[in-house]
Image (cartoon, rainbow, N blue to C red; front, side):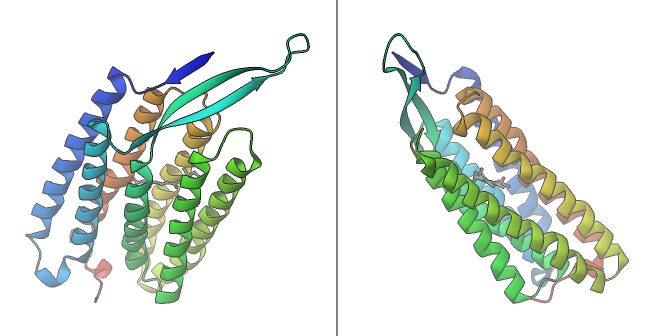
Length: 251
Ligand code: RET
C-alpha cells in the first residue's frame, strides 16, 4: 500500500498568504530605514533582507518549487503475515532549509549586535546555527528506520543548545554593559526568540520526523512561527531601536 502525504488547498493558500505578508513586511522595513540616517540603518538592512529571503522562499513553495517527494517504508509488526509495510510518500520542502540557512544567521546577527557580543562569540553562534540547519536538512532526507535520521536531529539539537548558550550567557552579560534599558530589551526579545525557535524542532519531530502531522498542518504551523520569528520580531526590534539610542551600533 502507498500513502501519499502531499500539499492540499489549505497549505497552498497559507503559503501564498505568508508570501504576501513577507513582501509587505519587507516594504515596511525598507520604508522605516529611509527615516533614519544611512549610518544608522544596519538593523533595518539586516531585517529587510531576512523578510525578502523569506518572501522568495514562500514564492517558491507556493508555486510548487523547492520541494521533493521523500519515500519511506514503514514496516508493521505482525506475527501472522511476515513483512507487511506501507510506503509513505511525503512532500518535503527543502526551500525552507535554504531560507533558514540564510535568515537564521541574520536573525542572530541582529541579536548579537543588539547585545554587543564580541566577534568570536558572534561567529561561534552563527557557525553553530548553520550547522543546526544543515544537519536538520540531512535529518529531513534521512531514511525512516535508519539511525542516521535521528542522529542528525540530535546533532542539530546540540548545535541549537550552543546557540542558546551564547544568547543566554554571553548575550545577556554583554547587554548589561550597554545599560539597564538595553539589557531588559535584550532579555525580552531574546526570550521571545528562544520560545519561538524552540517550537521549530518540536514541529519538525511531529511532522517531518514521525509523520504524524499532515503536510498542510506542517505548513500552517511553520507559517505561524515564521511570521513571529521574522515580521513580528523585526517590527519589534526596529520600533524599539528607533526609541532607544543606546541600541545604536558603530559598524
Ligand atoms: C530543525 C530540525 C533539527 C533540530 C533543530 C531544528 C531547529 C530549527 C530552528 C529553526 C528556526 C527557524 C527560524 C526561521 C525563521 O523564520 C532544523 C527544525 C534544532 C531553530 C527562526
